[in-house]
Amino acid sequence: MSEARRPVVLRGGTVLTLDAAHTVLTDADVLVVDDRIAAVGAQLDVPAGTEEIDARGGIVMPGMIDTHRHLWQTAMRGYGADWTLTQYFVWYYLEHGRAFRPEDVYAGNLLGAIEAVDAGVTTTVDWSHGLQTAQHADAAVDALQAVPGRFVLAYGNIQDAPANWTTSAEFREFVGRRMSGDRDLLGFQLAFDVTGDPAFPEKPAFEVARELGVPVTTHAGVWGATNDDGIRLMHDHGFMTPETVYVHAATLSADSYHRIAATGGSVSVSTESEQSAGQGYPPTWALRSHGIPVSLSMDTTVWWSGDLFSAMRSTLGADRSREHLEAHAKGETVTHAALRAEQVVDWATRGGAAALGRGDLGSLEVGKKADVVLLRNERSPVMFPVLHPYGHVAFQAQRGDVEAVIVDGRVVKRDHRLVGIDLAAARRTVESTVEHLRSTLGEDAWTAGMNPEVPETKVLDNPYTYTDYRSAATHEVR
Ligand SMILES: [Zn+2]
Image 1 (cartoon, rainbow, N blue to C red):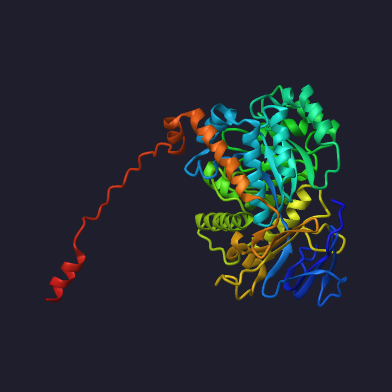
Image 2: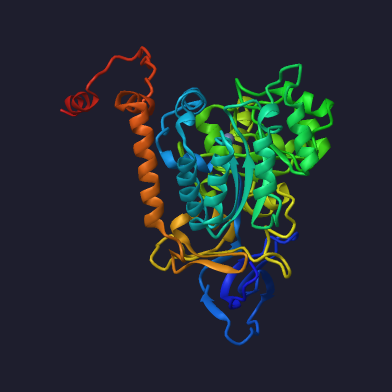
């Protein structure tokens, strides 16, 4: 991205810098020159020809970072709203995940990537575990490169063992062809899970990651799927490193958390996912007590929403619910909330940058990469007064309030509208993928997949007999 572009200044906003001291500035400007933050402060002098964005009354913050998102699944948005992990595993591992052609991965990735940028998520880790062939991987990358956001391809393939696909000739060829260049706008990770098999069959895949110098991201502590055995095997073999990202980490023992903390890794918490799918209780309350760094993620829009406002909100709720519940079980009362709105905004920005080893992202400081979001919505009764800016971001704002987005110094959303993005083309592409999947599966299976059986709920016997208390009361008065 070397072409000259106009400098941009956002004028007069409440600026959440998310610097180390979490400095908040009111009536402040943020100046972007080329791909960098050039200045932050009051009434800045700017170069001639600078594009001005009015940020008065709004909140200016760093672009948000989602560290775990299966973008390919966006092609089936909302289909699994009533699923648990049980239906998910059947669908993606055994049935329709296999029916995804390269063009279907492209369709999901394209729409998901656009959706991310639109919601102010300027960096998304595409946890792309549907890459059955290198052609699928090419399609995934083609889509990411068609959207002006920052992405990390976390390469994975749930249809084959990690030791197989990571050592295949076609994977090597793909890496040499597509992933050997500048990793600023398109980073690279390996994405696979550790089964806990004592033979540690994932060892060759970890060795490939080490040789390539790329981080591993892994679903860890997922009830019924991955557990402490996987963590112990990784640790015993020396594969737990600071750049390792553990996704969910919701059902792990204190011993596993100690191992993660001691080796400097971080956890990507997907609260909406953990609350619905059944990986385990959203673990921030435990991670905080072990001093484990946290980033946030939305996992997949096949079930739930895809923006980090939802992540921040649900994470605050889950953490506080747990604290109250634990206290009440002991007959105690929580009088002061431990997890603050400020902290989840940090996790959605700075925390994500740290998890990805990107010290140049996640805050608005001079010299950092210019990924900037303006929250402002003059038509919304919810965007004023802004009294507690972090609380406003976490509990009041939503994706419709994202007025402007800058990625790598380029304005990609302005006045609530995406710039230079062909949404109609993305819609056509996704429609043809839905048609393909639906016809491949057949109408009955398609409908059944979306509507899992509802377990019977027994209504409890009630010791009180129903009486019509209103007429009884009327009778007494008479
Ligand atoms: Zn996941």
